[in-house]
Image (cartoon, rainbow, N blue to C red; front, side):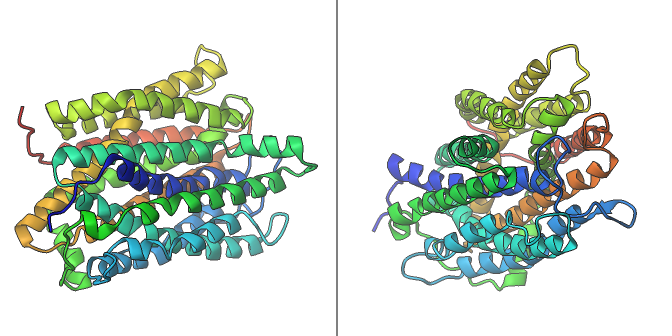
Length: 448
């Protein structure tokens, strides 16, 4: 029976899954440092001590890194399990459905410390629940992203579905970034005097909403109707090695890893940049994030057209170059000859093109790499390519949180903000590295 083309309504259902897990992962990235090590003008109390290990790493940075150790071992396992699945319902979706409930629960528990105050007990608790969250959400993300290569049957389809994915991802970013705004509403209508409690109720609500959205691909897409993938017969370790034999994939992976460290630094620092460097209320963070995302949508048609006309690689290189300049600007925030609000709007306007290009194109590029590898080897292990990619994405996100948390030691409060500004220097270096490595990527030129 011929494989059906995925219709628009099911493409939207597929993209909705990305919005769901984007909300939860961005809640962790944006709110974790702010909730556990808040600036002194936030109305929150620190929940873990600012102890230094080896003279440089604070407790929060080590917690963020250790939570991913479980994830690092688990990613290839779930990819191999998905690639080799013989489930009559499909290789991907039957696995995804088991991840949703635990992801919702663990995401919420991350923001429920055992002690209401600065305590090492909270550090141990946070390590456990973060590990539970990362493992749960990985069980959804790896099979979900592997579906991209299997549901699409041409380069144009890959770019289009990747675009819809990115819309879902950035909508998730907006929803997560507005967390403080929702907490304001809760405190306005309910008798909650503690800011932390309002944020906890908000995060529970957002996590439950995320879980409901993540069920949409499972409900509306019959995997067997739209894919023709066969279970792979390569063992786990050889499958991992095969991905690294692909030189194009290695250049892609290194640049993508550097980018996600940089992106995580921006996301983790957003509320600090707004409240400390610019002296604006924390609820403005969601407003600026929303503006950036809406403006990025304007560039989506250009990115799609440019990818067909010029290829994906040139657009990615330009995006890395622009992003590197944005990090230079972060170092000088609050010192530029504009009002604080205008400085932030300049920053988010400039960031809108990189957000569009680096959101749409990398997944489409990886789907091309995976499809070409399948054609050359005869083995369908798209899941392993996406597993390795998302292992490095999550390691990058975690390293970004860890770097940001580590640099707060050098200043994170009004009048003592040098640590926040150092994030601009680190981000600049990372974006330049991403640009240099991706310049070695060899792309098949589009036919005009």
